[in-house]
Length: 306
Ligand code: FO1
Image (cartoon, rainbow, N blue to C red; front, side, top):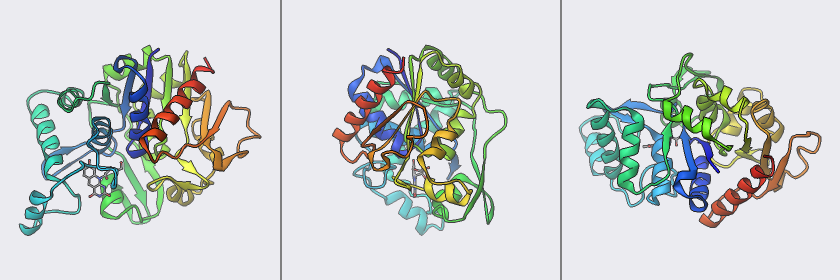
């Protein structure tokens, strides 16, 4: 059974960890959003790739949801002292990841190869694939104008009201992504922000088409619980874009792509009027056991749709 997970940052990484605990590495492939990527202090930063990689390696910072555990901040503190930009907090250990990625990319390698090398040395055995090997940056149109993603998300703490998300026109999936989707028996959409974490992946040709035509089952897990995002700007930006913060909005967003939907017991009954197959369970993942349990329930549910 070949399972592919489409994942963004924190929520995606947690479900990825649960799945990786249940499945042999050759049966799970994680396709990750790179729309958050940017060059900062001359370094190629890939936040969602790193969050998934660090989480599967067991070295992620569980408080912040990004960067490394047991981190130190000597270098970025010195950058502050020298008048450099310190709004994007790069820890000393985390810097090693960006430096090594830069080395691979500047010596003829591409992002998939760089990620593979990092995963190998971090002991992550299931493939983590960037959605594309070319830059495909997400822009956020806000009341303050069009902002690069990290400027909106970190520098402005996602406070500027969102009007719309601007995705690149001609992003192309890597060969590895295309092959993984072709082989997939199950395709799972992680509880990541649909607008800025999952849609950038769907926007990369031919990912959306692959899901729409998938012979296997495609199942999405909601990122919203009782009208709130588990973490991050999903609920706030939905309201700002005039989208009701409901489970139905998420189902409609994935319409035509999914065969089943997983949402939280606190929204029990919210989708009774829709005939899409659905699993209502505890989707909030606090502990590692929560991650494994939800992963198992999602797999069992998805297999029941085959
Ligand atoms: N998010 C923040 O809110 N503040 C930061 O200073 C910050 C630094 C950072 C460094 C490396 C990295 O991989 C991620 C980092 N993030 C930070 C998270 C980043 O903004 C991600 O894009 C979000 O997690 C959304 O996916």
